Length: 197
Image 1 (cartoon, rainbow, N blue to C red):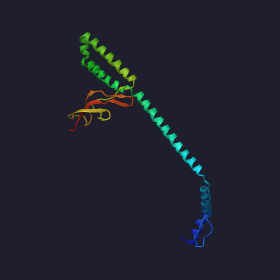
Image 2: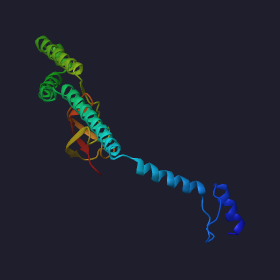
Image 3: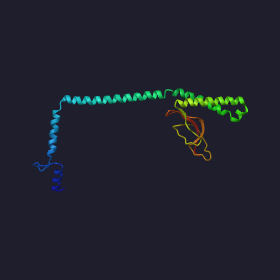
Image 4: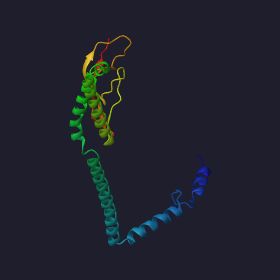
């Protein structure tokens, strides 16, 4: 780097003058340092303490606000999911009504009027129970044979030998339907899964 390029660079930065040893310095930079030193000397210890306490207060207020938000979220979740244990027990009733409704075919219901009336009553009760569950945020998982197995929504009870035209790790049999409670899994679907070939 030539002497002239050094002079140009320092002149562009607002630096002028030379020290006896030939080093360039910046008058503006030195003036700024002197001003900062004067400001540091002029700071009162009380001002430093006030600044420290102000920062501490700001941190404390932010922490209290975060705690208030977390508590509000906990209360909301407690209200939203309060019925989960009760609802889980009702699912067995829903399963029994589903089994009872599917135990009688339409042909048998038409052949025996008493059985038909009984089946109709079971179907109406089952429909009413599912409507009430749905009104409180409890819905069934949509599941069908051949769907991919998802451990987040399905509980594999057994493996089934791979059938022709089916893919491995897909649903082979549905033992119990799964249910969601709002955005959480209340009970996973209990299924049989096609194994590897």
